[in-house]
Amino acid sequence: MSGVPSRPASYAAMPPVPSGFSHLLNPSPNPPFALSRLRLFVRQQPAAARTCAAGDKSRRSVDPSPILQLLMTDFDSQSEEDIKMLKHSQHVVACHLFAVCENVSGALGGRVADEVSHQPTPNGQKEEEEEDSIRNVYGKTYVSPFFVEADPEPSKAPSHPGSVCKGTPSPIPSTFFVFADLRIPTAGVYRLRFRLINVGEPTVTGKIPILHEVWSDSFRAFASKDFPGMRPTPYLSEKLKALGADGAKSRKAK
Image 1 (cartoon, helix red, strand yellow):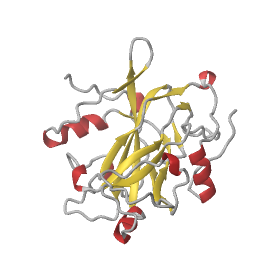
Image 2 (cartoon, helix red, strand yellow; image 1 turned 180 degrees about the horizontal axis):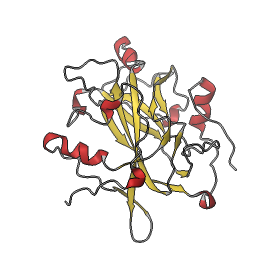
Image 3 (spheres, one colour; image 1 turned 30 degrees about the horizontal axis):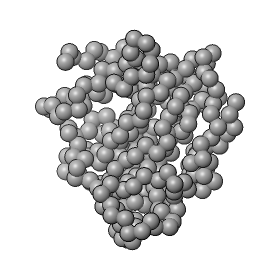
């Protein structure tokens, strides 16, 4: 596979990184996902976006708001330790934006532009090349967990991987990460990469390991004149807003 081209000048400005989070752009090579019981699941996928400049007061966010759910391998709802881990306030999810290639017909493709194979490479080469293809996104790209004692939409709740059903618990405790303020400045087709870390976990190397990583489906960011309009607020967003989730929005379609 050919080398990754240099990032265009228009993408030189990177999303702001909160103090203490720079390790996310320089992670330990080949993060040991298998060592963690925690898994991310994209509970609500982004569908579209209207381009928005950095200082745009209209704050046109990705629609609908991407929502991640935290799952746990072999989760036991009766285990105090498992519930404690699910509620852990030091878990943070980081979001980065990547451009996606389109096929000749203009349909959305699934391949991230400039993305290389996820097979391990020496000295973190894959990570360096992947970070070079990050695109600009404004807003809140680092999100803390929101725990609820009962899943607000249990009929669509995913199963914890490898967990044995001991009768469906009622209610179902759940943890969400709501990305309600993501704004994209440039029209195009994109995917979002989400990474889970524990900011309270000390390491010998000084770099916090990535516990798990997932990608969103492809979606299009439209120029203002081409944007088809906002969708009605999904049921999950409505319920999380009512429960007090930070940033969760409720609106009618326009």
